Length: 213
Image 1: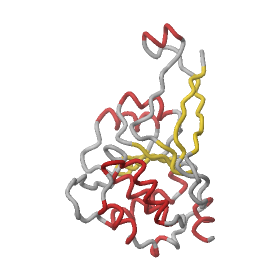
Image 2: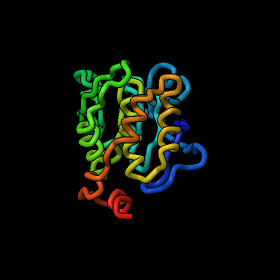
Image 3: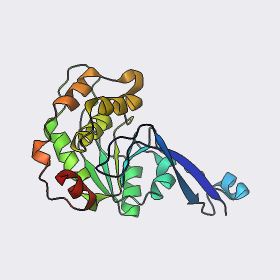
Image 4: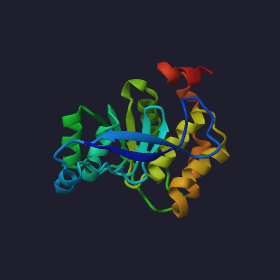
């Protein structure tokens, strides 16, 4: 067997830290399993493919686009306890089977992926999703929507407000993933999002330390 090395962008540091001055790469070393397809049998390797726009948000929190079956082997290496899906459509059966077989809990907060500007993002839905993210009992946790850009970007941006990031850093991270598809309405939502009702949540470990600093 051989070790497969996968490099993934780390978009944050420990919970409660300021945003890094530059993106950091962390390395995940994975031991390949035997019988991973004809090519794997030939080379003694298994290919681990991260989902679209995969990155580390914080300790125990990841983000990405919608995972498909090609990403399941990679996701297994994360030891996920929970997945937050921000899409309103029924979760695909192969994905449900993957969750069941790996003991992963699904939290689905359906937000329409509308392309029109000035569409209201449901603040209550984002707030409920944040409660799941803040509870370290749900970690390791993956947040995803379809492309890992707008809906996921808004949720992560609101988390960054709780971590006391400045708006310019929040917007820079959002734009890094959204690129040419960045929406003024999303950034406006993050700017106006009220975090006051989340500061006193009964959370534990690093999240609790962050909220009380």
